[in-house]
Image (cartoon, rainbow, N blue to C red; front, top):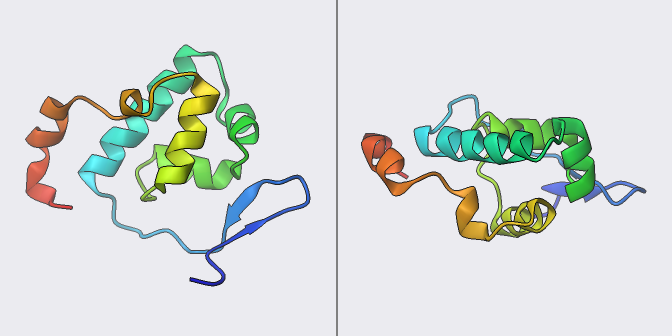
Length: 103
């Protein structure tokens, strides 16, 4: 879809799509997991977003569960965190407790 994201001169991806106001429990759990890994590695949200090449506002929305993050961005995040992509996801037991929300 045209106009979904733009790359600025520094190569930072800035989304032009407004986030949904409702938050999905699964996305909140994913965001919490990302935040935990990021803070365990000593990154601030701002410096980590710059390291990954994402806008800080977009990355903050991902951590709050307000964005359904694209697979390509999860790969970029995993590379920057030096973890396997699967480690970015919360345990299945946590997700199945919240299964009533549906995806």
